[in-house]
Image (cartoon, rainbow, N blue to C red; front, side, top):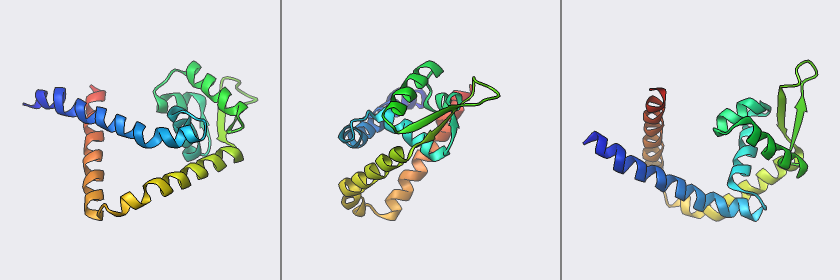
Length: 147
């Protein structure tokens, strides 16, 4: 039964979460001429305040070359800065720029305007159940990944 859960229920749930995330995030990102991946990249850099290119690659589960290319494009758009260390040119520090912060704040406002009324209909108890379930799923997936 548990392997059936893994093959059917878990994969269906993960696909549903991914599809739903795309439905919620894509319109917001697209309105700012950005892909969901670019938005996630900015969010990760913003959350860390400063992050190395290699660390960001691990967080995004992408190779350094692809993340570097993505960061160069975001730097050209003025959303982030990339700085090499003087003592170690391999280390590239990424920071969100004022324009990057501004676009993230606008996206937050857009999400609030679009989804706040809907979330008002969800009880605190429902949100707690969702959070608890997702945390348990995260733990399960981490255990599976560690094997």
